[in-house]
Amino acid sequence: MSFFASLKVSGSALTAERFRVDLASANLANANSTRSAEGGPYRRRDPVLQAIPLAGSFGSELDRAVRMVNVRRVAIDLRPPREVFNPSHPDADAQGIVRLPNVQIVEETVNLMNASRAYEANLAAINTSREMAERAMRMGRGS
Image 1 (cartoon, rainbow, N blue to C red):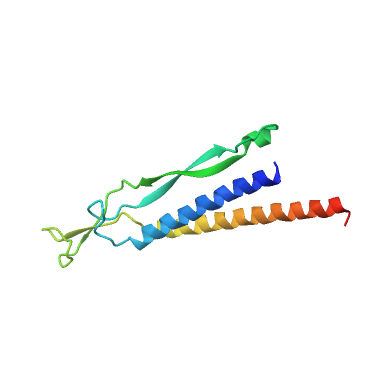
Image 2 (image 1 turned 180 degrees about the horizontal axis):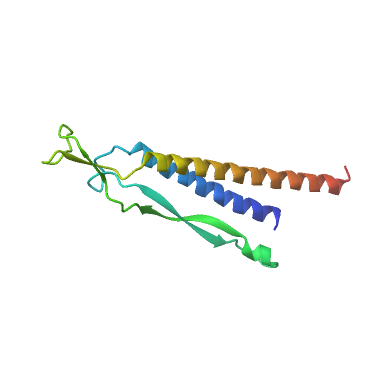
């Protein structure tokens, strides 16, 4: 795999992981939002990632197996909202039930941690590729 191909693959992963962080952050920020633009409580969002072939990749089996990642779409979580008895809440129904978003704080925190670690791993891959290219150039100069 070429130096630029490895940068494209890791760069696409950085973009996807940043998007995962953005969505998890939005989910956490709206964990108690009982009203949304669509009506009703906020609904949790998840990225749907897709592996796509690296443009111009050909040759060895390894080169053909190399894939970039792309955010295909954002999926709305269809789990029902949480229901809490709170008759004093302004959005409570006649029985005193408030419908809260289907966001689970622990789940979103884990998503944030996973995305952060994957982001760091891809940064390390970019740095390693850069270091290898620098060493190859130094060897070519005879230094």
